[in-house]
Amino acid sequence: MSPDRFDALLKRVRTLRVGIVGDFSLDRYFDIDPAQAETSIETDLPVYNVSQVRCQPGAAGNITANLAAYGAAQLCPIGYCGDDGEGFELRRALTRLSGVDLTHFQQTQERQTFSYSKPLLHHPGQPPKELSRLDIKNRTPTPKSVEDKLIASLQTLAPQIDVLIVMDQAGVPEMGAITPNVLSAIEKIHRSQPALIIIADSRHGLTDFPPFIYKMNATEFTTLTNSECHSISDIQTGAARLAESNQHPVFITMAERGMIGATPAGESAHVLARPLRGPIDIVGAGDTVTATLALALAIDATPIESMELAQAAASLVVHQLGTTGTPEPRDLRQLLST
Image (tube, rainbow, N blue to C red):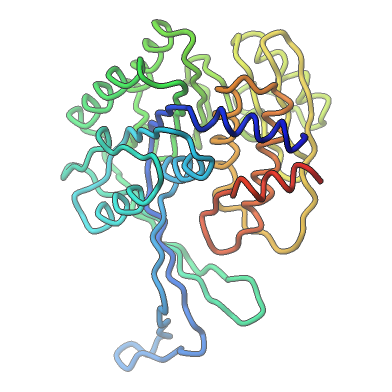
């Protein structure tokens, strides 16, 4: 992609209004200095001394951070956090992002804030080493009162936005933001506003999702299609068949093998992954791909352009170690021109 084409696309991105509905997490990094290690007098266990705590939005929040990095005009998170310390940190992290409007982001006593706490050991001259993660997830069904507010927000915002991203990241099905009722509400919006671009990504797979634009990995694709597609040609054929059936584009990420995209016309293409340039950390790369594809499709980039942008953006993010990364447009522009 030429620098001029990239600049033209980025200029259009900066006019977009984007809704992000789904599971917002707090990614909390504890940077540990091994040189300050101790042994607990009380338990005789190792003590890790934390030199810094970094709080970043994760899951749908990381998608929002990626959208903000591109400079989208308005970002409307539709989700929730708990009325707890993690919720305070998550809201604060979201408010730091350019263009974010938290009008439709609930804070509720009926939920805990979905959180990933990540202790990182920093040895000089080495990539950070992550210790066992500590997760906070809701283990009860999402209350109807929370669900109703999510649906009301979707109905209010849908006529005002250019693209809607649906992110299902909750650790337990039906216990996050994307419940069957919320999904049904999104489907009704899609029927009433067929021009609204809706792209969906789910950790649990898209089997129960209406036919939106699908973004998934290769494992999720084989599960969804009940197939044994392994070769690039088989996946391309299967993706084209699925896109034609759904009458919406399909995008499949395949890590080091790149990405496949297919259109409702039954056409498909394969874009190679960018070469690795050193140690990698894959945290957040899938969110980057989702955000980039959504913006690219909303500004009428071609499917191949959309995948090229997404692959380059993901390449930048996987080389950001020990963080939930986002791409910088200037770095993306440079990478695309090489």
